[in-house]
Length: 151
Image (cartoon, rainbow, N blue to C red; front, side):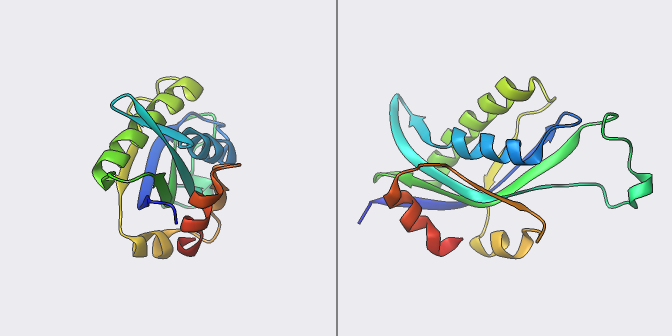
């Protein structure tokens, strides 16, 4: 059995107008494939669902898509391979990786993405039915296997 740590997490950031939600989710999932900590890298697997965090207004009250940024979010699970990891350490590693990837893809969106641990129950209860599933493609089979029961 693979020695691993699984962390339920929430990621949110501003995205520029006309950004594609599925592309954002794929960016997050692929960014988590290999994380590094103090010069050593380790495999990881990110699976979850992405969705828009739109303002609670009627559709006709929303500004046109080209007028302002939109908040996007992901609720999911990050599995990190190897022993000795802590949730805090893995979150710091993925936070750095996601921040760099979002900036490289979308430019300066005004603030770094928020990435933090949440309760497992919150992932299940707070993920909208309309959210889009994404995961790290071709990830380590062992990491996928240990994560599946949570999905």
